[in-house]
Amino acid sequence: MINKLFIKSTESKEPKPYSPNSLNIFVGPNNSGKSLLLREISQNLANRYSSSPETVLIDGITLSPPPTEFTDTLRKKNEEKKIGAYESYLYFFDENQNDSQIGSIPIQKFNDFLEGKIDDYNSNYYRLFKFAISQNNTLLLSGATRLQSMEPMNFSTLSDTHVSNSVDTLLNDETLFNTMREYIFDAFGLYLEIFIIGGQAKFVLSKKPLPEELRLSVKPAATEFLLSNSYDSSNSSDGRKAYLGILSEIVAGNPNVLLLDEPEAFLHPPLARKLGNVISKFVTSDSEKQVFISTHSADFIMGCFEAHVPLNIIRLTYDNEKSTFKPINQDILIKIMNNPLLKSTNILKAIFYQRVIVTESDSDRAFYEEINSRLLEYKPEWGIKDCLFINAQNKQTTGIIVKTLRSIGVSAIAIVDLDFLKDGKGEFANKYLAPANIPAPSYPGLQSNRTTLKEAFDKLQEEHGSKKPEFMKEKGLDIFKDKNPEIYQMGRDFIDTLNSYGLFPVPIGELESWMKHLSVPGHGSNWLTDIFEKMGDDPTSDDFIKPTENDVWEFISTIKKWFDNPDKKGMAN
Image (cartoon, rainbow, N blue to C red):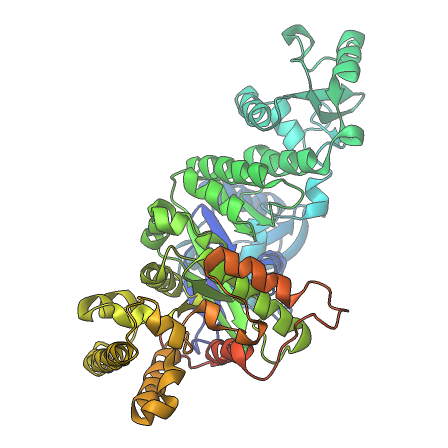
């Protein structure tokens, strides 16, 4: 079992130690290193040579002391072979090469390793120690491997007792076999059976349970029953084969350390969710298993949470040549799962993105997402890559989402209409300033600016004789450009300060104030439908709206600058 991973990170000069538990799940955006991390763990444990391959993420690994059976067997083998100075050195052997000798360690050094006294986890001696313990005990389960789960395999016989695979284990362990059958029936409504053909056996999925008297039988009746009632590798979907391949290794595989890359591959979302639930419950109840998973599926993660068992979720990022490795606080994860507002916003998907933009409503979300899409296509220097757009219930709840995301290391900003200025002193600080992690000493000045701006709008509204509550949003800050340049400049400085912390009020008022040249009236979903129609959906048409140098396009480019700033303000420590 792995005791510690030492992770390279641009956040610190020294590698970060990470203590894994039974279930460890790596999440993060594309190209953040999730799959690479699994491969490097596998390579590190398999390397027994003095020169190791160059790594990007793993600096080293330490193991928990092996079981006494391992050390007793090793000492006994040394005594039997009486190789060289076996009284002062302990020799190791390659189990896959007829126990050929692969190296030796001073007995005192070996005893130190057993006691956890490791002065250099990359020393030649410790590499050999790790290899000897982890050989045949670590498996990197790839997509191709799991798709072979229904192929024929060898099984133990009186003449060959050295077979080691999941079929053989389930042939000889009725309790585990029944556990697997329950999992498979729950997923597919089919019965897991083992079809014996000559000297090999394979998993099949039967529409009917095989009669007990025919189970594990080579009788013609058993063969005929399974041939007429079951699905095998030739007529089973990749999803079924993948699900069976993963669970058979989790439940019955011999490796103690299992590395599982993208378990959701080939699975429909509900099945990925079920798999996450089953793996979580089984692994955390089996003290001899340690599983490391990289995933890009919110459904799989949701299934893990619903198992209500201890698990570690670690978020990896790589952006602007900076890498991070951040375990997500369990309390925050529970909050995400239990808070109705957070659950309803697809917030869990955010852990797989570099950047998140939170808007007031679904109409705002759809509009800004389309604007960004066109920027990425036609003016990519202003577009925001790898960005998820989600919406809150209103402007007052955008902060809850932003604060939660930033607390787990996700770069997130909020876009709010200008009438957020109406929210009073306490609400202004609690709903907007605090969630953006703006320092408290800045509150009085910003609150004073808010009050001044609101009073200026109120005065102007009175002068216009307007009683419309939307006056502030409809006019925007530009109304002061000529009428009161001093107020206008103060407003711009105020908004710039908020922007520097990732809070983006719409300076021209509201969503519906953008693209006025298209002359689209109305509000909300009606406005959205009409503006999308005016923007066009055929890129080859002359009427298709493409980015310009101003308007909402420039607004999104301002948000991009915050995301791209490596020293951005407002992120949680």
